[in-house]
Image (tube, rainbow, N blue to C red; front, side, top):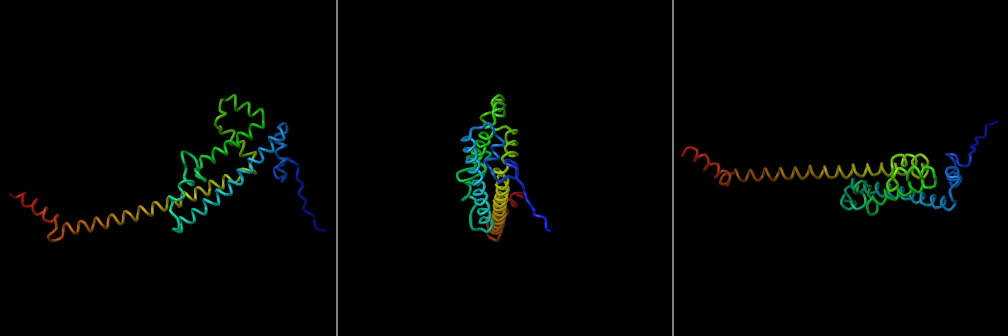
Length: 203
């Protein structure tokens, strides 16, 4: 008789599909409303990851195919002082993600007290980000896809600028050659100047 495959999921386990039980297991003493708001904000960041990845990959494909110019997506796809672009500059995306990290830690009084005692509450120290990525992996897993899409977009933009620089250099060298040919041709200003300079040497 074939063995029936059965997966038993403990409430709050890493592979559990019940997100409410997962948050309850992490923050048993937190207020239910606070947990509900935290889940809603995490889901908002999760949907934002999907939209960001889609927009960046579409823009990279259009630029690579020559259908768009990198300057058209600069307002949302470039790093602005350390942020990735998204719908108005990715600074706001990084700020939103940082705010969700702080909300995540705020539901754990001991870690929140450690954060406040360290005097680092306005910004997210590395240990908070590591803890958030470890515990909120089900919500933050799209962040790595966003970074991968950003790297692809930056490579496409860099390749576009390098190709344009090579083409511009070729055009500049061509016209420089044509100018020198015209100056050194019979009756040209350059040939006349060389003749006068050569004659002055023996005057």
